[in-house]
Image 1 (cartoon, rainbow, N blue to C red):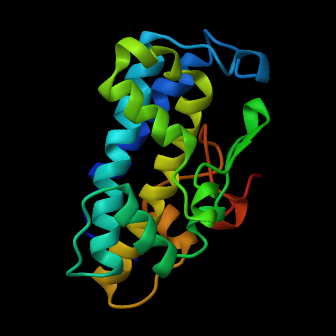
Image 2 (spheres, rainbow, N blue to C red):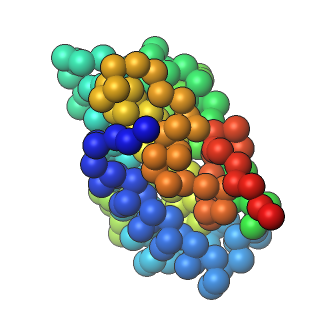
Length: 194
C-alpha cells in the first residue's frame, strides 16, 4: 500500500521531536524539573503549538468539509464529534518512563492548560516566560504527535476512498516503536527481531 499524500507535517513533527529529545540530554525529564523553562523550551513549545494549529485545521477540513475552523474552540468541537477517541490518546516516552494524555481536557469541553500557556508565552512572553516550561513543552509535542497521526489517518483514508487503520498510517509514516515518542503499541506493526 502506497500513499501519495505529502508528509510535510510528519517531517516537521520529527524535527520538533528531535529538538525535544536533544533537550533530554541537558534537562532530566522528571517531576522535579517539570517547571524548568528556557529559550529552547520556548522555541519548541511555540513551534509545536503553532503546527498543532495548522494540522488541526486541516484535520477538521477532512472530518467535516465546508466548515469554518478558525481557532482551537472550533477544532475541539469538530474533533470531539468526528474523532471521539482523540482526547483519550496517550503518548509514551518509554526511555524516560513518561506518559502523557495532552488532550484529556477536551473530554470536559475545555482546552488544555498547556495550550493556554502557549498563548500566554506567544502573546505576553515578558509576563509569562516561565510557562515555556518542560511540562507544557512535552505536552505540546505529545499533542502534536496525536494530531499529526490522526490527520494522516484521515488524509490517507480520503486518498484511498476507505478507512485506513492506525497501523497502516504509522507504517506509511515509517514510524516505529523505537522512536522517542509513540502512541499506544497496537498502532504500530511489530518488527520481528532475530
